[in-house]
Amino acid sequence: MYSEGVNLVIRCHVSFSDGLNEYMLIELQGTIENYGEPLAGRVLGTLVWHKDKNEALLQIGHHLLEGKASELEKPLLLMKPSPPNQHFEERTMIVEAVIKRRLLFKNRPKPFTLAPKADH
Image 1: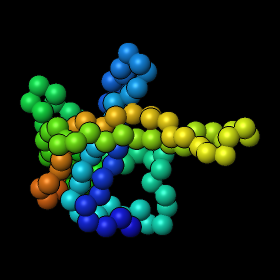
Image 2: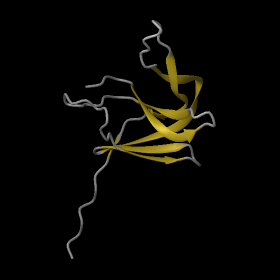
Image 3: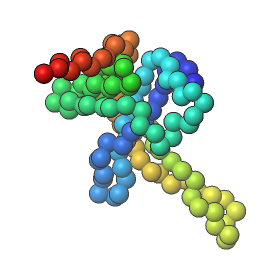
């Protein structure tokens, strides 16, 4: 189980001329329960982003969250260690992406249910 203030990173499909990707941070208030299974590589929910309004909707299970996009005060870098090199003792870090924006979901989720289909 993850505790209060969950931060997730998603790819924004923005690539710079130097090959660097831009990712976006998703900030949630509350708890995401994983029931003992890792979340890596799993579908968490459905995200709909209205770029023209800077607003987003995130559906996780039967919960609907409303969020807003904003710029981070200071950009973050997503880095990973370089592969080991037998000629050098030191390892360097490789910048994978820059994170300049976030989607903040600060309000309580709303219950979301599908209406039953009418029989014809």
